[in-house]
Image 1 (cartoon, one colour):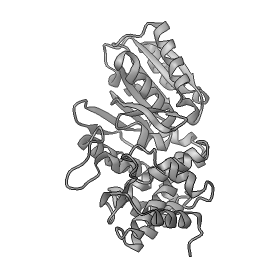
Image 2 (cartoon, rainbow, N blue to C red; image 1 turned 90 degrees about the horizontal axis):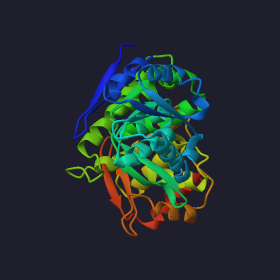
Image 3 (cartoon, rainbow, N blue to C red; image 1 turned 30 degrees about the horizontal axis):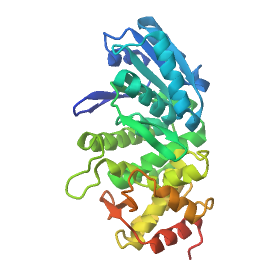
Image 4 (spheres, helix red, strand yellow; image 1 turned 60 degrees about the horizontal axis):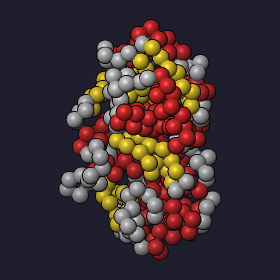
Length: 366
């Protein structure tokens, strides 16, 4: 396939390059003035990272820092270790960070770049489907605390993103499927063609060797680009649109489930469950028709994602949702749909409907 360049406009414009074998494009995104590069990578991906490291070492003085796996990397102590390493190496504002890994690596690496000397250049090389369509684009960075996920963070747009689809060929099947949670979400909030492609051939939609998955990746990235260009810092959209908050469709319950599971559940799986939950909530609140609500479970299940959850109790999940970033004071706020690609914000739904949606999520409702 030929490379596709998706431009992200706004105050700090950059390009997202989608293709295969893209390592040689990295210096062009970093810029000529960079002398040193901190290469923050998931430690288990050291072999996969070699082509990228070879390109970087031919051009720059490289400080390679291996990071812990998964959500465990999004911790204050890991950020401190990175800051200490940058300080010992004498990194200045003209130097840069490159991240290589999944969404957690991107979040942590972006946060380190955002906070070192109040912001240095960063280029993301996402290696998972989830990171390609979600974490790498849009400038959100963050770490977790005991109180919840991503509660500490910063907006820091990258200098560029390299979406090398060849990395998906080595991705475990369960991780690829989990990444589809964010892809299918984009179909419901903005681009129903995504749903049509997934439902027409779920196998092709999750085949890293085929042509359907690259189209889905590009479509999902375009959805995110359109949203973040219009509302980078989540200040709200016009004419009733939730703005950047729309990207958190399904995340209020999804994040609560992740927290209840000690962040052992994959993010995309939790998002899929959360989307089904909020679709039922919107139906009960009289916002969404029954067929579109039911389509959620069918679409997510088609690619192998979970649509029910019978773990934590309602009270535990409700408490977690109350510290969600979208909450205002004691008022819960959810992004819901009033139809396909028609998102709005629902404030203060009734506890009866919250509980009834929970029962349906458990499979208890008749």
